[in-house]
Length: 459
Ligand code: ARG
Image 1 (cartoon, rainbow, N blue to C red):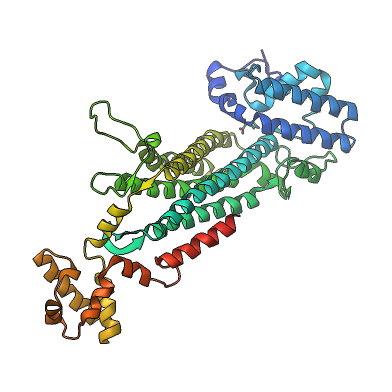
Image 2: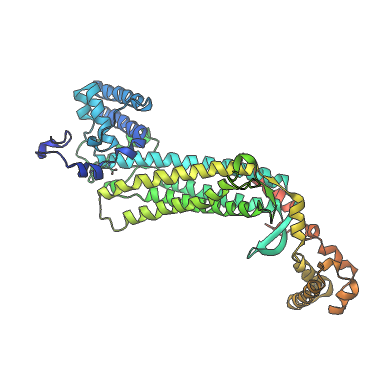
């Protein structure tokens, strides 16, 4: 039996395999609310323009609400034969209100319809990501505030480099996640234009008002080119690339939590609520949530690459290839929101261990740069010479198996005669971090300024 929507041209129905590859209803039913919102705006506009009667539009708009409540209640019978959410909704509308349902698709195509639905859906995901990131930033600010003055080792190459503060380390992630918010915000602004009324690709001969539907759907304006409106998915790619960068940041933080919670580091204790045990080793407490978030970038970036590959080389205008956009974006968005929520929970529940942080900060000759800087300031050495002299002192301490501060003044002076008692003042980790008052530096006073600035910005 030929298709109810386009049966006029067809004498028989589709092969079962055709239906299997063609139908998108199993996943695009997630666009039901957006589809109905778009159709209600379209119907109201058609009536305002005299293309439908007020009675027809009212019946359509009412009927669509009934369909929506059926879907929300889980009573709706989705049909694969009806291919996608658009035709499932319209077909049910016809059962409910009869003839006027067939007038809804005037001056519209599924091409601008799906572009509209998907934009509405992706727009919500931008908002959800921004909200999730704000919550995460707040928990990071709390951690930073609690440990603004705790000293820990700062690393380069994962080797002890210079002492930094716990607050400074937390605030580094605040900066990263705040840029993620910026990316979602920018992309949201750019994507907030309405494709509705582009129709199949060329626009329509009906006297429609695209500004009216754009406004009703919360878009800033209608898209200016109908070919572009139905065919590009750059807005979904911008969401995915922003999500990928954010997932990458989450992955880096996760990796640090995994390392820090190990018995070798003991920098932090993860809460029981975000850890798991082992079925064989009774002592184990594993940071599974952190490990999973570390891995989720694989899915999000995978979705990004998949959609780029779908879009590459697609000629204008609409092509069915773009139906492959949805599952990727759905999965990436779900993954990102779950990761943000889990990270927020983990950070909120995280207990740092200031004693272990400080002990680690002092090991590995972390104040060697402070010694070299002292030689530049107090003995007027060129930095390169100071670096060399300090290196010799590090080698001496290493041979003796002690810290720099444990070398006697005589030993120090054997390397450079100008060294005085005052040098010991700069060899503590507290003095080291307190001295780093340059803008953006790790000094507790600077970190507290940054925390206050971010709190003011977030409101
Ligand atoms: N399910 C389709 C999609 O996701 C809707 C648009 C179909 N349009 C068409 N001309 N076949 O892209």
